[in-house]
Image (tube, rainbow, N blue to C red; front, side):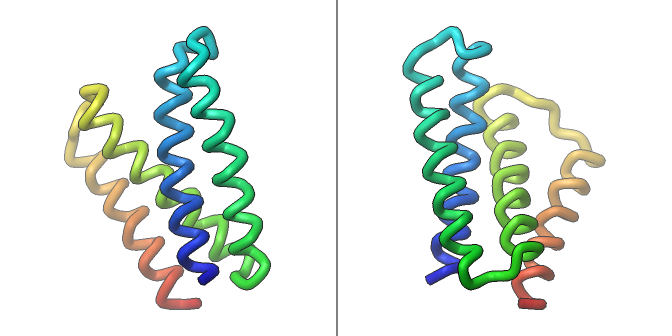
Length: 104
């Protein structure tokens, strides 16, 4: 169950990071509220997962899911550049997440 909470926490990290972008520096109320709720929920689920999973594994996977998810959202929704180097970097993060899971 800890892995489920951890993945959900990572997905919520994507939500709050996207909402932060949409808040335009906290000048828009709804995205700012979504960001705040998403952050609290994401941190809470991470903390619950850490009851069972090691700190290094939990934090690395959580950040990795959020980073790669935000990378994809940036490309799809915001037109962020897609370059071979950026794709390689995202692939390395995914490889790290998979390796961390296999090592646990």
